[in-house]
Image (cartoon, rainbow, N blue to C red; front, side, top):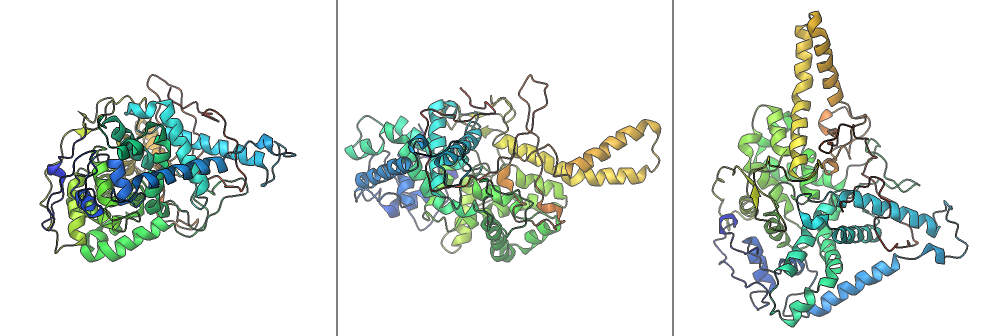
Length: 528
């Protein structure tokens, strides 16, 4: 069971006493809003942690008010939403299943099925080393929650990365139910009802997305008549996330560390290259997953709009400053593209100091990073295995694997073309034995700079080219192309699927909800 004794990772606060709140015991004033905020800052939130998150995010009131009534209202709202967005098109008299009219319920039905299939492709790859997310019922709940949220938020829709926000939320709800003792109060018995896991997942996910949805918007881009988003080479205004990162650089990084900001600029490394992933996934890939609930609690302590999330971005950059000032741009980019070697506790403490330096002292330098990483095994987030040990993900690039692959590609992209050009200049007339290998090297150097080929970007949370116009020539804002890995034991080259960065148009009509998922699974990617 996950206890709350994480003193080695807890940010210190000289003005606040350490809060001790009992698990599964809604005692006041310990479970009051201010006490929960202090506990979250100290990274000592009790269980049910999902309820503490809901209180911090203003989804439900503290225990001194009517929690049961609030939770009941949220569950009824989700039932009503599903009913509103679920209608059998066969009940619409005179509607043609082959109609291309935007007002057709059948067209809405087929578009909804396509959206669910799109979401499913991401869901089946969620945390491949965690058995809980391999269960069909769990995957179905995730698809339902993400689908109905996207349908009810047409200005955002569904975008890749949202499933990695829902997964930790849903896992906390699951663990809170799993570890609950038998002698629960009537209030907690109602809050932790097993049959309402989907309803509560939507409630909590929706609360988190109130602070994150601005990072998923696409500026002034609108879906095409077919309901798809234009590709990233279409000229449009920068996204909110790009503007936000530019503001972080200009208003916070430059005043705090002008030398580091200038060095990143000299290396042609813009904040959106890595910051989009940091913000959209709420730093979910930057730290071991065992630390993410504590970091999220720290962020949620400020309320649902996450007003101080920029201090975490700055704290992460300053914490690894000694690496980021390296003269080799490849080393700098590699450090930013892979998971942080720091603890979430140190980053939180530094962010708290940057926010209120007079109230919170600067934390001491972090200890050297451990040689192993924590990953969940069979529902236990504290299990540790060496990073190179087989995780059983069957070749699916996810989490730290993706980050390592992108870091390797970033190094190749930064160094291979330059090295190949120097080699070609040094050998204007290469020996016959070296001519063909040199030609191959030059071809690889050209390929790695090319964006329009059969490779796809598996890390669309790194969409640094979203705000890029077709006339730009600055290569620092190009997406790194990544090839999908093969399953073990196969030699057949993978067929590049369609781009997954798709947002389907939301119509006024509703769709028919079939009785079972998946609705469309052309890749047959569901893990049974």
